[in-house]
Amino acid sequence: MRKILIVGGGIAGLSTAWALARRGVQVELFEQGTLPNPRASSFDEHRITRHAYGAREGYAHLMPEAFRVWDQMWRDLGTVHYEPCGATYLIRSAADLAEGGWYPGTTRSLDEMGIAWRDVPLDEAARRYPMIEMSGLLRVVETTGAGVLFPARIMTDLVAKLPEMGVVLHTGAKVSSVDPEHGRLECDGKTYAGDHIVVAAGAWAERLVPDLRCVAVPSRQVLAYLAPPPDLADIWATSPSLLDTDIEGGAYALPPVRGTRLKMGDHRFSRSGDPEGDRIASAQEMEALYACLRPVFRDLERYTVLEQKACFYTVTETEAFHVAPIGASGLIVSACSGHGFKLGSLMGELVARALCGEMAMEKLHDLAGGRVLHPHWPHQSI
Image: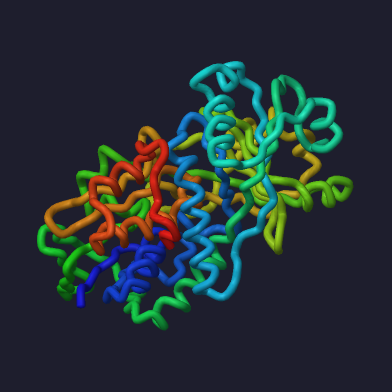
């Protein structure tokens, strides 16, 4: 029986272990913290998932398969950690409406995938979304095929399920080095060997794979959990996710659904910071975030701050996943940005397909990089 070693217990590592174990592969997973690890890049209350991807149409066309993988995971876990709530996009830049911008790419790919969407008249948007700042708004777009995933719940259930599938989990196991040529790693003074080694260590991956430092970098991000004012509580509770399309700093809000809190953040990447550092957002960091939020959401001073948090993502220059061979027996799986969670389970499935000979490694690299505009999936591929 083949044996695969996985470094990292975030969504990429756990999903890869799950997909391999479903194929009867022997798997050992090493996580430097607890499982699940609350310091992991992918650990959170809820994250958005959607088919709308702007000009990144290759990623849009991955989403139907991503939803199928999540559905298979729900069947295996015996519960659904997804809530469909839709997503509404706020366009304030003329560049987002021009060819090559967010609007043409999104509407084209949604039409091709059969995902419903509509332009919302601005007067209707003002009535329906009184929490939105209407000044400067050019267009509002509502889409179906979107909702939120619940990462902490997903990862907790995966950690409980994987041992039942035969996966060996090592917690508090800080890997000191990897040998991708020979599929070996060193952990706590002991050598472990397998047929292949997958490094999915998130913001810590570059410490084990130095070549990654010029490709994907850790990025310290901040976000806020808020309680809306009483007169807006019911509106937020039934709201879709709200996203400003400005990729240089667009704000977002995820509604408080199924026991989560209202979450707000922005799409600017610091591309700096040490993932070993604290997770407490500084006053300066938060003021920069609120400066980005205020032009998008009205009357933020009326909201109660519940928590101000720092976390770490791994970010590539083009926000593309980096999944590539390292050495003769290694593979690096690095997410692209803070919205990588939605594709985390699919990346694990694709890695399993490649390692088990179901698809070429070159195809895996191109799919993960969003370079395949209309991928062909085998019938009932999951």
